[in-house]
Structures are given as structure tokens and as C-alpha cells.
Image (cartoon, rainbow, N blue to C red; front, side, top):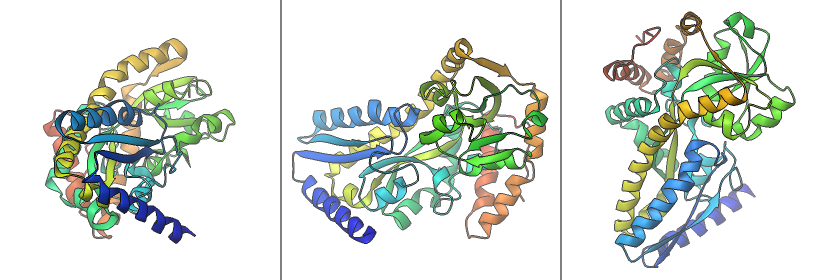
Length: 353
């Protein structure tokens, strides 16, 4: 049944793509497993879609229409890469955290926790790393029948909880949620990690499946996670550029050349917006949380101690991924170097040999 559905979806995508070049109206299925309350998904709706439509219609004879599929209405958070590959979605936004087997190296900033909290700088670091390591871009086309349009920065990660804490020892008997590799920030620090996703976060916090979440402030506000989690602690895990916006390659290749050019332009601008908006919104959202719940300023010594507890993990990840034939040591050393070149001082300077 899955093969039949995939074949049918691909046939539909190819039919649409084949006619797109000559038709005046190009219809694109776009979506994410995440809801619009997550900044990058909201920007897909509020920036990428209208900008693409406007610029194409101003500068060509074509029109753009979108069929939207957000909040998992077409594919779940764990299914976007495959959904775009198979043509179920034409354009999809997703977190690499849900692709630990297919894209294990793309979460490289997560392997370097306690980095910059500035999403603009995080994005710049990622852009410079991608420029040095073509594999990070090429793998989408080579293995997954899609084209990487944009890298996506997140707001800085902190820790929201249902209880107040001041020291790492206060977390020892608590279950804390994360997604993918950032669960290791908990595991290596002696905290009980629980794999989850934002789609289920509110309910699972409310029903005590876990007592906290590694999360950026936009989600704590927009998804009302402050209701089951009335404590938000500014631990400063870092801003991670570990999402991507991709397009099915069959769809992309069949678009008129002028539309592809405009799409690439809009995708670059959207990429920058993910850093700019997350940066500008961070303090406002933290201030909003201060009016709603308790926001803790963590002692810098506690942050440094947590970073120190993770000191061996980046090397472990580098060794594991090198064993898979991936250029992990090159990438992780580039992250360290590019962060420092962009003015960031690591609380613990990880060593990758």
C-alpha cells in the first residue's frame, strides 16, 4: 500500500511539474509537521509563500498557488524528508533532529552545545560551514530527490520546567524532554531524557509524561507551554541552525527557469529572516514570559559546569560519524573556529582530534 501511495503521489507530482512550465498557474503543496506557532513554520506562511507569489507574479507571466499542510496535516514532523522525496509535499520545512539516520551530520551545531545564543550568528556560522563542506548541501539531491532551499535558524534554547531549579543536581530525578541529539545534553549531565516533539508537548507536559523541555522561548509562549511549565530558566544552550526547507527535485526541475531563479532568491531571503526574526523576538518573548511565569537567571557557573559535563561528547560524536564515512571532524572543528571568528567565546572549548 505504501508503495502504491508513493507511486501515486509521485505521478501527481510529475504531472504537476510537467505542466508547470507551460501553465500560467503553478500549484505547490507546502507544509511542515510543526504548527505556525513555531517561528520557521510561521515564516513559511507569512514570508516565503507571499514573497514567492508576489515576486513571481510581478516579474513573470506565471501565478503561484499554494496548498498548505502545516501542523502535520499532510505529513508528521518525522515524515517531511520522505514526504518531499516522494512528492507528497513539493516544499517542506523540518528539523534534522527527526532524521538521525538520514542526516546525522546536519545537526552539527547541536553537537557543540552552549554556543552562541544569537540566531543571526548561528546562521552565519552554519552558512560558512556549508560553504566549506559541499556534502551538506549535495546529499539532499544525491540521496533524497530534493534541493535544499534554505537553512533555518532557531531561537536560543533554554529549559522550561514545571518546577524551579538552580543547580544541575536539582534535575537529577526529573524527566526532561528534547528531540534527537539534544537529548544528550541531558543524558551526559545525568538528567533523564525523554524523546518528544512540539506537536505533543503541551499534552505531555500537562499529564506529567515529563517535567520539562529543552526549548526556545517562542514555543514556550506561542504554544502556551508556560501553562504546564511555569518556570523558564535562561541556561543558554545555544541557537541551533538545524532545520531545512527543501523542494522535490522533480518539481524543481520542471519549474520555468525564471521561477526557479526567483525561488532561490526568496529562499535566501527567507533563510536570513529565520535568523533576524528569532533574534528580534527573543528578548520580547522572554519579557512576555516574565509577565506570565517565573523566569530564572541561571548562575554562569552552573552553565559552565553543565558545559563541562558534556566536554567528551563532541569527540564521541565525531568518532562515530567518521566511522560512517562522514566528514564530522572537519565540520565540528569548523563550527568551533567559525564561532570564534564571529566573536563567540566558548564556556568550554571542546577539542576534536
